[in-house]
Amino acid sequence: MSHPVDIHVGRKLKQARTLRRMSQTDVARHLKLSFQQIQKYEIGSNRIAASRLYDLSRILDVPTAYFFEGLGDAPEVGARDHGLDIVSAVASIKDEQVKSRIVTFIEDVSGRTVAKSA
Image 1: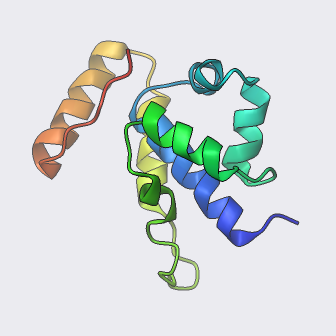
Image 2 (image 1 turned 45 degrees about the vertical axis):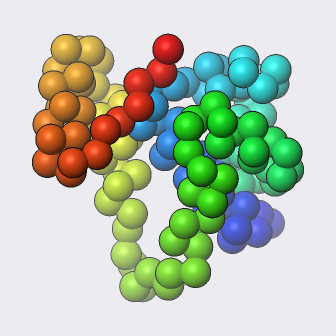
């Protein structure tokens, strides 16, 4: 059984990776791992070591603390993380031009810039 903290950190990894338009393979390549290992991190079945978390923070350009943000917050029963739903929906768009326009719109509305992967 996965620990709730590992599941939370894995979700944050997936969120940051998807927002940066990186695939699991892209992240795995940086870490010299298989994409399957990244999958296991993201679902929380494998723990992420502190050194690996540090490396991920550099690759994804987020502070290490990002992975723990919202951990102590108790969501309402039945509450969903709509942010992850939106990230997944945008990531599933095949037309790169449409996807780029949606991301630009989100950046304009939120006042935040989404880092683009190289």
